[in-house]
Amino acid sequence: MKADLILLHPPSIFDFRERPILWGPINDLIPSTPVFEMYPIGFVSIASTLEKQGYRVRIVNLALRMLNSKSFDPERYIKKMQAEAFGIDLHWMPHVHGAVNLAKMCKRLHENVPVIMGGLSASYFHREILESLPEVDFVLRGDSTERPMVELMEAISGEGKLSDVPNLSYREGSRVVINPLSYVPDNLDDFRLDYEYMFRSIIKTRSLDALPFYEFLERPIMAVLTRKGCESNCIACGGSSYAYSRVCNRHSVALRRPEMVVEDILKIQEFNSPAFVLGDLAMGGEGYGRRVLELLRRERVDIPLVFEFFTPPPRGFIRELARSVGDFTIEMSPESGDPEVRAKIGRNYSNAQLEKMLRSAFSAGCRQFDLYFMIGLGGQTRESVDFTIKLARRLVEEYSHGRLIPFISPYAPFLDPGSIAFEHPELHGFVKYASSLMDHYSLLQNGLTWKDFLSYRTTHLSRDDIVNLSYDSALRLARIKAEARLITGEKLAEIERGIAISRQMIQLVEHHRTQGTLGEEQVGESLYELRERLMIDRRELDWSQGLRVKWMLSIFIKFLRSFLPGL
Image 1 (cartoon, rainbow, N blue to C red):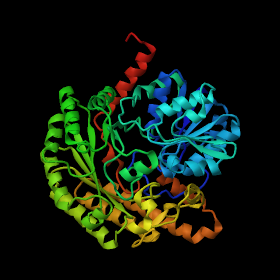
Image 2: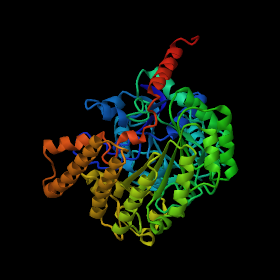
Image 3: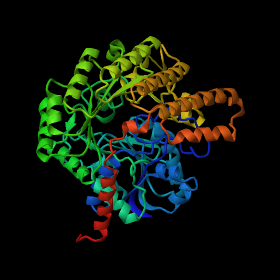
Image 4: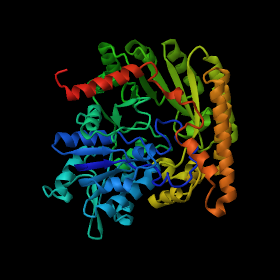
């Protein structure tokens, strides 16, 4: 494998195939498995940007390769690589174990090839990475590293100077040099999510290395970015306004032009895939979102679109959305059904406002409305969790004519570095067990269960409380859904069995902790949970139903045209 830059995506825990791990519900509400094999969308934008500058770039989803095949040997695979540089993402903190070990492997096998790290977590811990990990040569900081990566590749090849590369941290002898974090674009006109790149790469390399996550071919979903930065300051979010300011030097939101947003959606429509629009369209000025909707209405987009809202939008916005999009789903994260807890974490709206939005959405023809609640919030108690489940039951019963789907999951496994809660845990109801990069690494290195991985507890809830409340709440919610026929009785039984197994394994680990190993039977039960959602029915988060034949046909035609350009 030969390239100028090879972008490598690691699994969350590098040796997940060699040791028993009780993953639990940490991945239930995202497309990927607990291995977190979904790479950040920045990989695609970096690769396509460099490609336009004449560089050969490959994306290798190493986590997915390791997940798909027990016999796949990552060391042998990396040893065969020929590259001018390796890029490893450390965007989400659960990847710290995989990223560190992958960097060590790359440097051991290719001593003279520089290793670059990037992502929000790498940006936060850039100094520690360079001081404690000699295997990492460079850290590119910030939320927009496409152009800095071009300049860094030029410097690596001798055509530029490291000191001139914006956002770069590196070593000069034993000294860490930190260049100014000066490349913070105030518009995203240069940003491109070129999904064609991924398929061109698959055709060119004759491999599936660039697939974004495990179920992508079976249950596709593609992202559309509307902005970088955030107007909100949710306490535990590493993507809040506070965190962006501290970590990325971004003090205001950068919006993509509405025309570019719709252009991406139209490109995704060519694949007949659902699209997830990232960012609350009603924020950043209502006119922005209405312009996007106006363009969507003009283009008559006919794929399922998923929209996220951080707060209930202005009156009439949902009606405008319904006029513009025929098939739409809405996602909101009230986090807690208790308005006092919700306000403490930075979501400042009442249950009355939430219910008003539900009524508006379903009267406008919303296909599905997903509500996300969390366990392990600052200020949360057993009573507030109970209040949340009771609210979920009432809402499901009240909106039985529509498809209202509540979810509940632990806020796990780590507090986001750079978030307000991470910086000032004691002021917001948290007790932190991990502060440094290697503190987090150690939790994943030494832990066997998702309880071990938790980097925090709250002033009201211990780690055991968070685990038990997560299981109890998930069971209650699953039974509510079964009663409302949102899930089948068979799925309910499967969830009950999975939670029972998970609880039993935590007890076994506690009992056998001094022995350091578990038996083969217990390992098998752990692997059973690896590719399954523990607390939900995966079909609840699948918007591709009814599109799969069209989706596969679109891919087939694109592959055919690559070999027969005149088709």
